[in-house]
Amino acid sequence: MKHRLYFLVPNLELAETIVDELLLKRIEERHIHVLAREGTPMGQLPEADLRQKTDLVESAEHGLATGGVIGILAGVAAVTFPPAGLALGGGMVAATTLAGAGFGAWVSSMIGIRLPNRDIQQYQEAIERGALLMMVDVNKGFMEEVVDMLRSHHPEVEIGATEPHKPVFP
Image (cartoon, rainbow, N blue to C red):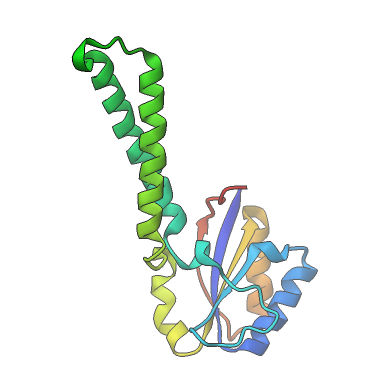
């Protein structure tokens, strides 16, 4: 299972050095995300995208679950109390579940894409002051090695929290 490691880097040059060191440790670039204040030139750094910057994924997941439950309830109600004497079967429950889940995910993702990611809010003040937030997804067993490398090579890096990483759609 991957864990996301958050750490603040004071400048662009150091961030580039750290990315190079992570790549040498065989961490793929797709698992490295850098977030900076708007307008900061990122050069060759792997910039965080909407999935890291916003609550898009988490909101879509919540909407999918909520919409699916509401769809099941609507389908069961339609089968139990059919309108105008229609005979409805299990296909109706499946159809309303899928429709509810899809609609819930869509609506929630439209809301989530406009909200900042809750996991990075604690770093927002430092980002506005010019620091760069690096998010690196690593296997739990490898995480200590990465943290040790950062502490020994770059003591000026402020290491933040780690969290289990929920993979985004493949």
